[in-house]
Amino acid sequence: MKIRNRLSMEFTLLSAGILLLVMIIIYLLFADYVKQVFFHRLRDRALITAQVFLEKDELTKKSFLEIQQKYMRNLTEEKNYIYNEENTQSFISDSSATVTPDLINRIRKSQNNELFFQLDNKQAAGISYKDNQGDFVIIVTAQNLSGKQYLNNLLMLLCISWVIGLVILFLLSKRFAGKALGPIVHVNNAIRRIRSGTLHERVLVPQNKDEINELANNFNELLTHLEHAFDMQRSFVSNASHELRTPLTAIIGELEVMLNKPRSQEEYISTMKSVLAESEKLTVIINRLFELSNYDAARPLQHFEPVEITGLMQEIRQYWQHQGEQFQFRHESSFTKPVYINGNKVLLETAINNLIKNAFKFSGNKPVGIQLSTSKNQVQISISDEGIGFEAAERATLFQPFFRGSNARSFPGSGVGLSITEKIVQMHQGTVDAESEPGKGARFHINLPISTQF
Image 1: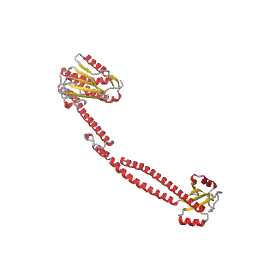
Image 2: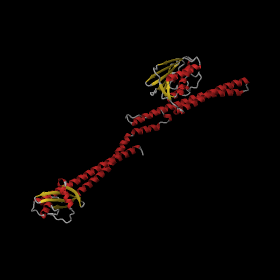
Image 3: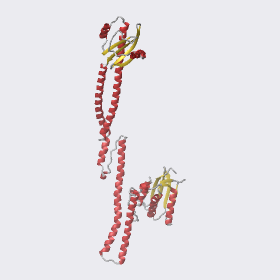
């Protein structure tokens, strides 16, 4: 069932329940009102009976009946009983009466000298009436047929109104549900049109600041990420293919030349060395591919612990100094106290060393600058060099796997180091970016969240 129909049905059922409850309350209140009105009519009849018989002593039963028929509208199956102090009938004799002495005594002792009750499946009212002749009890019983008719008419009216109301509620709820879900229909239609080749399209965002607006925005953000991922995949395949094709082409070319005619032993040895060198390059590229996939697969399995930044950078500088005296640093730090992050020390060393290695390689081993600073609960590690830099247009693709700048192809490498660095930094909930002017060096910034537990 579609959401529109389900919402209409649920709203109609809920409204039907509420409407039914209200109608039941109305019916019960009206039934109680009809009952109370009829009881008071019976009481008034009892008072008239008392005044006619007891205040006018000379009035006979025949005269009372004539007055009753002339001035009072008869009630259905109405009967009147008058009991004296001995609880025996007076003035009016009716052997069919089922009134007991206990009932008469209850009427005498009742509050306000009146009592309403049921007698022989009829409504009855009894009053205690005192005059100069003694203490009497007058009881009047009757069937409230008109009241039952009123209740039946009300019940029929309520049932018809309830059915008609449900139909109207369902139609209105369906219309309003369709209107409310209209933007979702547009979003759904837009989603149907978007495929891998049309990821540049976006869903029209409704102007209402509601959940549908939020859904459309989130879906557009998802499309942006997917489009970026597809672009990276295409770039990765293109760059990886180029890197793999180069050594394979060299190997195939060397072997084809060797097979054209017999060669001397020295030529065979030279060719084999060349093939071996290209094979080693191919091995490095393949290992880099496995390394990239391993970083992605191992992301949720890494063990994190508190890492003190100043100590980490000190260990990294000592490592490079042990590699040779040509590796020098310019170190700056604005830390006034130890700064910790939650991370994996080995992975962080790998990420930072990749940047330092590139800085030395592309600057001809000129001193590399390291600057530590903090800002907005983040620590920033900046690595700068005096090398060849990169073009501004290549900044967006700098961290893609196997991408190499146009001015970096003469340097050895596979174009994977920066991609690995980015993956490690993202694994630590951080960011990495770069800035450069061609020929004036490059500057890379790693931003990592500071751990507030230390």
